[in-house]
Image (tube, rainbow, N blue to C red; front, top):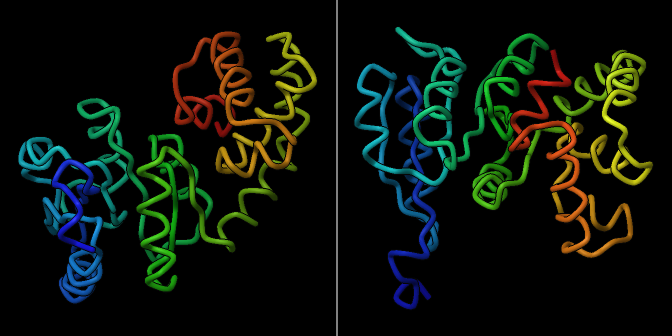
Length: 217
């Protein structure tokens, strides 16, 4: 029940969207969720300090914004609020925008035509530090990974990863959630986090966003 939820347990969400009709629809969607609180909305990134001050847990970001693009917005947010999760919600399906978003630090990439329940799922996933990607976009990414596989393997040889660490890293690169990775590798979450910590140490990185930047370039 809503009354049983404390303010502290609510997911604080923000929306940056310049299509006013879609923005209003998103406001209604999020406001109807018992575990979500809409703390900020805007149709541009001109007053980004106000966005910082709202301290959102999750930001839903369009790409094609006036004045500053959503991709630039992701970069600015990750600099000021590194623990805030961002995912793109857009009409664009081209590879350049997808990978630039991921390299900027976005944890997910959905299309506006995705169903509302998928968007709500994305908010929960990003809040938990997981990636979520539209199925069509995921296929584009997998095609790209196949093309880049040899180059990635050459890079991995430099870091002396174990076979298990390579397996986990590949799944992280593909944007799989921690639960799916643990199930795929048939290991506990505790063991997965131990492997992930070792991978981060060997690659000298600190987040999944940095994995994207290192291997999607």
